[in-house]
Image (cartoon, rainbow, N blue to C red; front, top):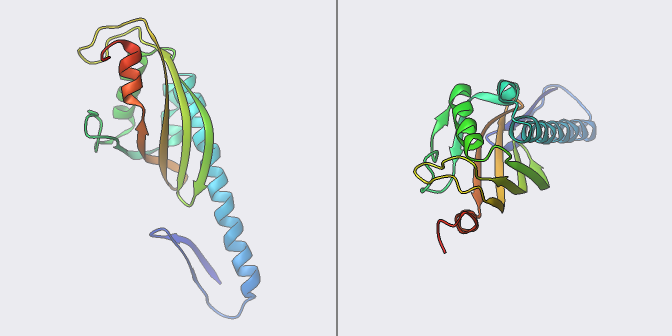
Length: 174
């Protein structure tokens, strides 16, 4: 009996010889559950170590060689595929603007090679954001991110967050 847990997002099996179908199904479900738990654990560690504790040296522990960013069209990172060094540049851009940025994960849901989280982001703007000057104002905003995994490494994310609230809190819009 050979198991192939995920192909294009569908649970599939290739059976060879005789076997106990109930045991096979339980084995596949356990493998899938363990992988989902591993992905969620990896994501929580990544958020704590890399984002909250600013340990950029740990990026390669969590990220695949290529990482694709899916955001709204107004974001300069939208649609870009980054290597580990480029992802570090992206992090440092954020850390320079908000050195105390922190993500508090509210919920996490795993499904196959995806882990979705809702979060509350807080921070203080002490550095430039593009052409906008530092405001020294605090922000707090909600968001949702779906992280994509390949071989238990994070290979990208799809994200929506309350950008309008952040812009208002910083005083850039009314």
